[in-house]
Length: 301
Image (cartoon, rainbow, N blue to C red):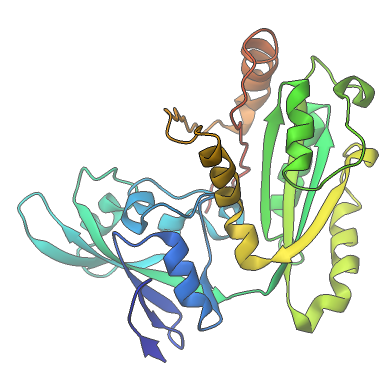
């Protein structure tokens, strides 16, 4: 079935949605869910435009499996610097297609994107665990993204460099009765590392989700007392950052400068980055309340 309207034109049987460049990803999600479908790869924040994230890359915890958002596009309409509107894909104007995707708008403006869809899960098992040792943390991330058959659907991570932040981290996810002290977890240099994973499921496999998650977690080496887990609707997981935005808006803390820096660091240098930045610059005097995310990625995606 094909249908138009806000959020894009969905071709469910063909497995794609045609979305305008100015559409917000949250509207694309809502539209495709009407057909039981959803895009395969996301960003953490859905109130961004389709053309905007596709002009960058679009990276989130699904990128290890599906690649970034730009790896999940079949076709584009692009306005070039000459004022031409050209349709491009792997087989039609391929140079423009690959230049526009991740091209930061330098090779044209994306006005339409044909985005790959997959059947949408109904619910998500969302799990967070903590590490005090960086090499153990990265080894577990690498292990999880190397799996081929049974795997998590989302693998991400972040760094906690301030003791006051750990309880904010927990309260934003799962309301604890007792606060956690970094000193009680045996951290090295006052830095903790969080591994964040999800497993999608629906009515057909709801009875086996506990067993599947346990099998995936059994080979990990996190701090045993740090496991927190919750279940929620798929759409609520994807739109989780918006809830934090609303809290910040209520405190007049959203409309302020949001400096952001993304870096691709090779495996061979990530330990140096941890020593120099996480434990060095940030772990000493320069505490930060902003998110420090770590996405493990496979180069072939």
